[in-house]
Length: 474
Image (cartoon, rainbow, N blue to C red; front, side):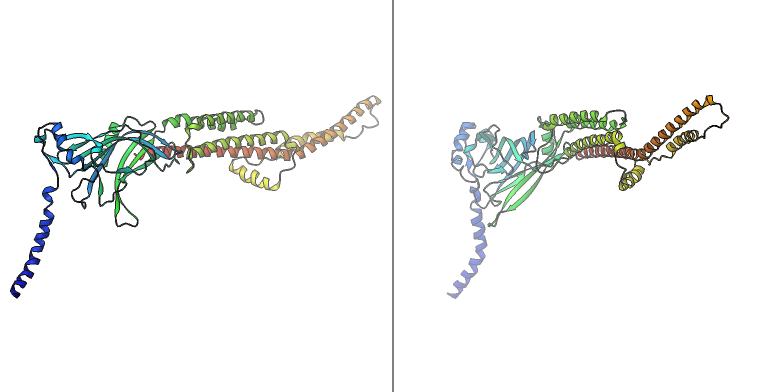
């Protein structure tokens, strides 16, 4: 009796692995429903598939632990537009899904075909969604999909995608946007559905560029793909995600011709207005006309500028600085005109202005301080001669009486010359402060002219660099 128990104990562990393998392999012959067609035509195949249609409510796997591999890719058919204010990208894509239905398989020779198109609602379809989708799909609905003889299923449909995208328009109109379309199952975890890339990303880019018919102001650069797994909170599972990154570049030619070049022309005309002599030409009227024209130009072109609250585009800063410089040049012209016309009535130039403007800034703009030595040298000899002639003593007694009348005239003339000399000296003392104020105005005028040239040079170089970099990014 003990020998029997011993042999039984030895037998059970030895056959246990064989039993386990046998139990695993039992469902193998039943892994798919073999469809038998009575005739090699589509009606016979459709009738034979009726049992499969009754299983459309469940995932098409024989074993629930088996996950469904869904391969996906798309063809970008058109870039409909980018809304900077709403921060979204509008595209039109041809979306395709491939997966395996384990419930059916048939012999192509027996049934007369290796594939058949059937209504979508007859089968289980993966619940793959685009996370960035923010509006309803308005593309035409495709009610059919393909079922192949080996159980493979192919679903293709057009989709008008309005997706959220974080737009960076700092370098507008030379900006490059990178928007993402993330595909994942809405309900099923990675234990049920795994998503794979059905076509290489460079092939997707190549086909999209070849098939694309609608781009507008945007140009497709490339499409890249990356796969991620997102962990589900409070669950020991994750969700498979497949992200497509679409890089598009704005065509900047329209904005350069209609916005940047006219603005540069106006600011250049305002720059050369500094060459007009302020003492003989009314600069202010000319500059006010330029400011009015530039303001109207900005109002007309306002619809071309992007509207967003995230960042301020560099071109908005450029246009604002252009307008600010025009206004500053007008104010400076008003100051110069006031100094030229009313400098004689102004108080002497303060010492700090003499140091800062006349000495320091004057040397920077190559306008050294003027002196009065030459003007005084031109006037003093004549006044000295007049003074000497007026102070001559009376003639001697021996001069005839006839000349007394002429001497009185000379004495009267001498007194008039002394009065004129006193007035000239007063004007000379007052004209020094007047010319200092005028010199201050000329220095400020030259300084603003230099700042204008610096601003225009830096702006043009920056625009050219950004433009070149945007095209090199492709």
